[in-house]
Image (cartoon, rainbow, N blue to C red; front, side, top):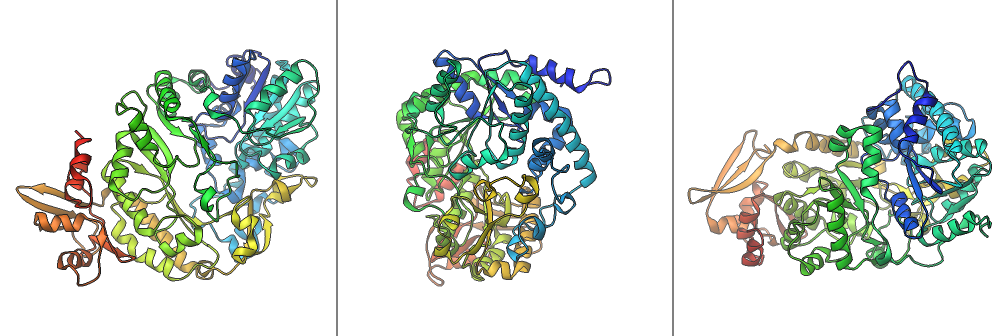
Length: 632
C-alpha cells in the first residue's frame, strides 16, 4: 500500500495516486468518505456502465479509499462504524465544508446521549455500545481530513472535468460530499457540480441545496435515465431546466447493464494494494429489484425506505448476470443490494436452472422463511450470508412492528439456517411505542437456551427514521413532540434546512422499555455474553452406534456438559416443529424441561441442531425424500 513519505508532501502524493486511477473522461463521480471500504459503491459504477453505452466516459474516484490509506484502515473503520449519534464522519468534515470548529460544535460532549440526541429518556437507545470517544485522537484525524479535502479538491479541479459529481449514499458522507464540491468549485468555477445517491430521496434531496451554493444540481431518487439526459444537455452547453432533477419514470431494470467490477478491483488494488483486495474485499454488490413488496402490503413501522413501487429483473437476466459477475471477480461473494428478495426467489432461480455451480456465493436480505424446505433451497442456490428481518422474538412485539412473522418462526429459521451452514446477520430491537413487560422478560428468559445459535449483531433501541410510519403518521402510534436529533445542529451550518435534511428523529411516547432501562441493560448483558461464547456452546444431535445422542454444552439446566441418549421415535419428536400443549406428549414435556425446545404460541419449537441430512430425516413434517435428495 502506497503512503506519503517524509520526502513527499500530501499534495504531490494525492496527485500521483489520483492520476493513477482516473483518466480525464467527460464526467467524474467521487465516492466520498465514510463509505464502507470493504464493498463496491454500486451506484457510480452502474452510471459509468450506462454512460459508456451512450458514448460517454465516466471516471469513478474512490476518495474513501485514498483517505483510508492516508489515516490508516483501522482508524477509518473506527470512524465509519462509530455510533450513529456521534455523527463522527460528519464531524470530520464539518470544518472543511462550512468553516465550523474542528469536529463541529460541542465536540467534547459527542458521547452524551442527552446532549446529542435529546434531553428526554428516549435518548437512551444505545446501551453499552463499547466505543470510547477519544477527543484528542479524533482532533488529530480531523486535521488530516481537513488537509485531505483541500488537497484532493484542488487536484480534482485541475483535471478539468466538465462535470464533477459526488455519490451520497449515507448520512455519514454529507459533509465530505459538500466539502469536496466546495473545494472543486473554488478552483474550477466552470465545472458543473452534482450530487446523487440513495440519500437523495424526498425532502432530503432538495434540502441539500441549503448546505452550499456551490452545488449546481441534485438528482433525486432514481437517476439512471435523467443522468444521460443531463450529460447531453451539459456537454452541449445547454443548461438543464431544473436544479433538482426528479425521475420522470421508473427505470426499466431489465435494460440496466452490470457494473465493471474489474475496474473497481483495479482501483482498490492500485490504492490499497493487492493484499488488501485479496483479503479485505470479500464481496461485491448486485441489484435484482427495487422497492419492497412487503412494504406494499404493510410497511414495517420503523422502516425508513422510500416508496418507489416493487419491481424486479427477470430470473433469466439475473442468472446471466450472476455468471458474468463471477467471471469478472471469481473469488468474491456477491451480496444483493435489494431491500428484500422477491418472494420465492430461490424457487425461481432453481426452476430456471438447477445447476448453480456457475453462480457466486450469495448474500441477501430476505423475509424469514417458515419451513426447512425454504432453507434447503437457499442452500441449493449457494446462499451463505443472509440478513433476515428478525428484529424480535416476541410475536406481540412483531405485530406492533407489522413484520408479518412470529417469534417462533424467527428462531426456527435461525436454527435451520445454522444447521445448513448459512450465516444469519440480524438485529434485536427495543423501545417501541406501546411495548410491554412480557415482550422483554420472555426474551431475557429464553436467551440462555439459544446461546448455541448465531447471536444478533446488536440489541439497541429502534430509531425513528424519516419516511418511516412512526415519522409520517406519529399520531397513529401516540408519538408526540417529534424532533430531529440535536447533533444535527452541531454538524451543519445555521442556514441548513435541518428539518428536511435530517434522517433521525426522536419523540415522546409511552414505552415500557424506556421506563425500565435496567431490564434492557440486563438483556444487553446477556446478548454480549451470547456473542462472546456462542461459538463454543453446542446443542447438537448425532447418530452414533444405533442411538441418537444429544450433546448439550450450554450449561442452561446443569453446570456441566450434558449428554442425552434417545430413541429414533423420541428423536423425531424432539426435532419436529409442531403444535403442543403441556401434558400432550411426555417426550416433548421432557424436552421442554431440559430446554431442548421452547413452547411458544402453542407450538413446540425445536432448538437442537444437527447435520442437514439428520435434520431432514428426523423432521416428520418435511418432504424428507425430496429434500435429502438435493443434498447428494
